[in-house]
Length: 94
Image (cartoon, rainbow, N blue to C red):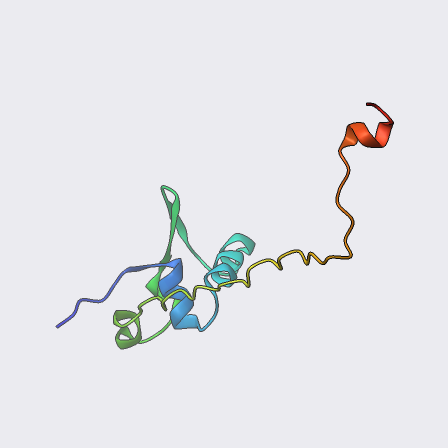
């Protein structure tokens, strides 16, 4: 029989609450949700969520989605494009 967790991480609390990890963090910072700081991490008491033990045992953060951006467009070079002049040529130097 799995044991009931006394504290949850912010991602675990976010899954249970159905919001993002950042939304849980903002609620903690505003004082809307009780939490304690352990080093660099935050822990939310399970009692602060007021949920049954079954929901608390199965809290697993969702997998992160990796977003890929499109590659930057390549410059279009046509025969009509004049060749670039050297900066010395533009100044009139020989």
